[in-house]
Length: 215
Ligand code: ATP
Image (cartoon, rainbow, N blue to C red; front, top):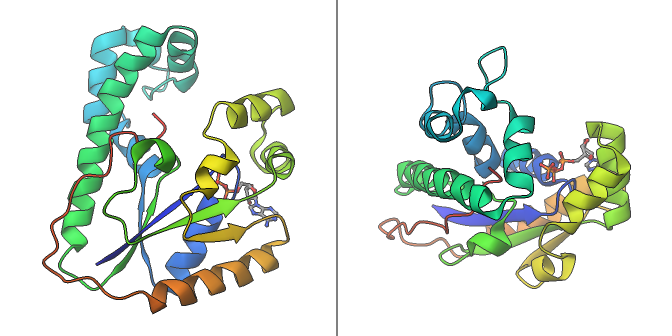
């Protein structure tokens, strides 16, 4: 298994890039998707959160009320720490399980980790960073994802900086252009991935840091 970290700021195009890499033949482990699975009604993280904060974080349809959780942790660092203490170790453990299941194969595994700067990238064979001008990200988040402009700016401002992410990159995917330009960038990235030496199959899988997903 060859393991490549994929990261980028909010709205940079990570999921779009991940899809294109899967079309090339990669396996995807998506930290945000794992968070959502673990927070589904009855799943372990959901249960631990309800134990701590009670029914006020469950919506009328029985699913997690993310807005209610955001309201609780937004201005209270103790509550945020408690949330991170529930979510991050569970995501890290589940991510390790998925990686172990692929470890003895010759798969190319893309680990889509929004918080790669924070979680650390030791043990990965390469890091791909999707880079976009923050103004372009704001426009796309407003057009495609229904964000308010200020909210999009705030979310970008609360993340690691563009420079911090770029400092980790082995390959930078420029997503300031069209989707067709992006596809060309991903082809270039895949050519690089395929040029990497394949690691031995019996390599030990170490957990990637505890802050992989965005709670
Ligand atoms: P998040 O951090 O919220 O998970 P992301 O980094 O995974 O976001 P995407 O969801 O892939 O980003 O892209 C954000 C939005 O921008 C989506 O609506 C997507 O369709 C759109 N988008 C991505 N790349 C381009 C592009 N090159 N041209 C136009 N729209 C794009």
